[in-house]
Length: 230
Image 1: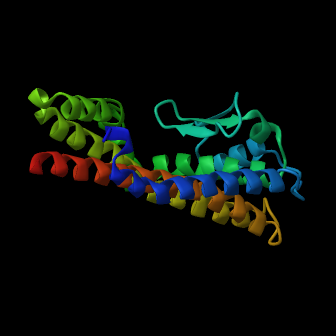
Image 2: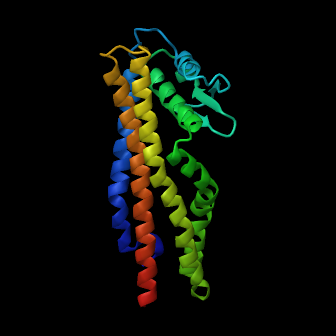
Image 3: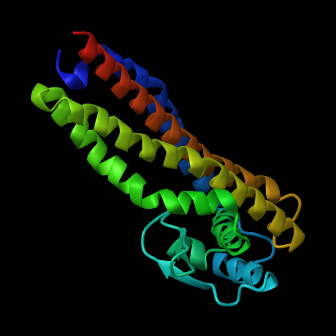
């Protein structure tokens, strides 16, 4: 039976279903609360700048970036990049996303260990996610180079570990965001629920990615064991 259609494919079904659900949740939650304007009238850029300044991070820049939901914090340049809708928007979605990315900047400034650990894994994770599957396929289809199968699994494991480490980083950033929005009175008590819904939906996408990576790794291991038993 071809590699891509072996029985271990059923392992990926839960991850696929969760990924589809996560994408639905983030899309529906973001779209819903992007239509609800915050009572404060603050834009995502103003929220990010206000949180940074109140924490003494005057040297961290906030810049707009193209794309939808392309928001991220770059620890190398210390720049928070917000998509145009978030940067200029004053909706609950815009403010929640901006506060979340600012939470990453605060993690970086405080030396939050899981974030430091994740950053240190980026090079090997990139290699593992790119080279791992290629080495695995070579090892499967060219028995002479079967040792590459184990090497590929080992490399891919680093990409999986990166996904797992990402979970506490993202959840902590969301927790910080909600606390900062409440403490700074950037959102009213009746608006926090909407921001929380957006952030929880976004966090679910990371859970889905981690589950998919874990199950894919397990699938590779089972295939390798099956080949060794032949």
